[in-house]
Length: 133
Image (tube, rainbow, N blue to C red; front, top):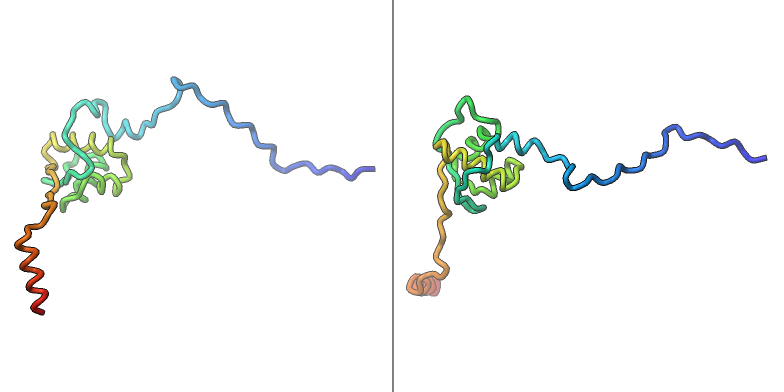
């Protein structure tokens, strides 16, 4: 005689649903809500190293993302840093920043590029100064 078989308390796992067809996949609504109905139609020259500075306090009609962005931009920050702080992809940051640039809430400027090679006379002066020590 075989021992009695115990029944599981939890039913067996259901097989995973079949993969969705490419045309039936759901798109994230959150990004659409952030971008707005006409998001992405305007284009601005914004890249990852563009520095953003707030020009005004958040207006009452600002979205939570815009308010957070304006609070962060009291000092110049790059778009890459803002994207990381707000946990938004770069594409969404460009949409938000383009809208805010159009409204005059922020300014964008290119980063300050340092010279690739220092002036030889300055390097020699530093070297001579160090040798005298």
